[in-house]
Image (cartoon, rainbow, N blue to C red; front, side):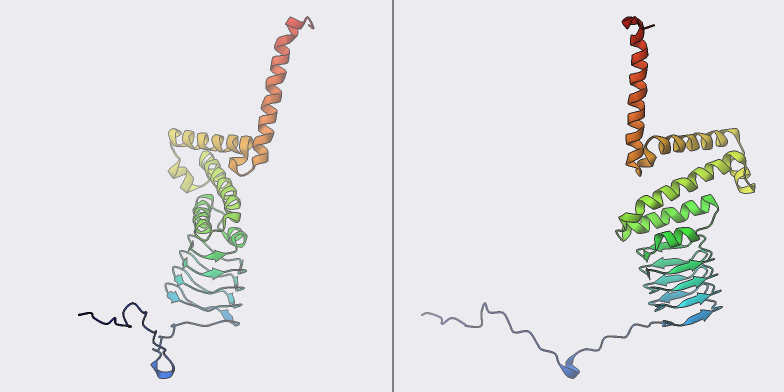
Length: 238
């Protein structure tokens, strides 16, 4: 006895159509909004700020020390005399944001869109702290695929490192006198500084290919000149 085929088998089921009240309600984002305003003297230190909307906002004399910013939107914002010591930015947008007279000591950026040169100009002058900030900016640039600015950050980091070892040799202040007080520590710092100088002279730390080409041409010219002087006695030109 044959079983008649079931026409429903093998056919995809029709998707449900949700309309009106059948559509489930999504919870709203708990967002703090200060967009298109001027914020003066805000004390937002040690705060956890999620989804802050600060589009084209001007911040003046605000305290953001040790605060955490997650998914904050600071596009076209302007910060004047603000403190960001130890602040952490994660997945934030700081495109075209300006920092004027701000303190960014130990501030960290992770997966953030930033104006690299603007941030670099606002980093602290102390070479050891500045170098840490540049290393963080380099890692952030790689995370967001901003490879165009990686080379610039690397050169800035090397300059800060050279100044760091120079300060170590000179015993610039109490920090360097305590950390590099021994002869061995100073010798190591001097060796590191010498290597950085040679590396920059020969091949521009890998960021200036024309420097490597120039060095190769110079070395070949010197070798040719040495070889020429060695051949002079054989040619009877002396």
